[in-house]
Image (cartoon, rainbow, N blue to C red; front, side, top):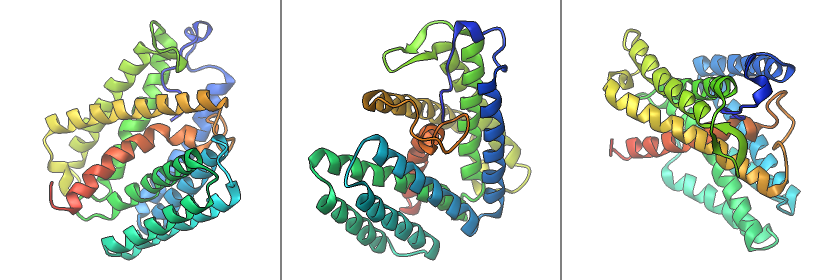
Length: 288
């Protein structure tokens, strides 16, 4: 989700100033309003937003990683993600999901130019699947409902915003200078505290509004899971920074003013979606 714990000496006196932050703020507020509105509506609108995000993000990954043949791979991956999203909306049986996914992977293996390209394309399909299916899957589950995606947004967005502000305000030792030179420990710890508090606060608030049976979860457990999700979010950000450094690009794309591409905006969210997806699978299997 951007660069949450960035810090530059000249910016510490005014962490909220500058054109870059203002652009990030405006585009972030607009996107948040759209996503939250779709979350409240649920159903098709919410599913469509995440399918679109997955398609654009996957296209950015294929382009950034120079994986070819680009157009044919994007057609196969796009068709597969759309098919999986339709399976979710229609409540298809698990074996139908597996068949659609298998067809997509088979198409990738046939089209991709070599072994590394196949691996990158399959990774793109996997990441797109997590983004396209997990948020609407949580929203549509009667035992989870609106609270599941709302908790993800609260933790990831709080981590992102507060890490950015505290990192620019306090500076200090670098977190992983070889991967992302501007990220600091002060930003990372500020984001961790904010993400944990936001997760706990949302669940406590939900208890008074009958949002979901999930609101009855112990707040101690919520705090631990929220802290883990905040760490996952920041790890996703660092992982994307490492990939961009490896491929020699500054941003994954230019679709979001102030943030770069969809991958730049959803790197941390995708990592938390993976964590939430594991919970969703375990829940559907009756393990939790």
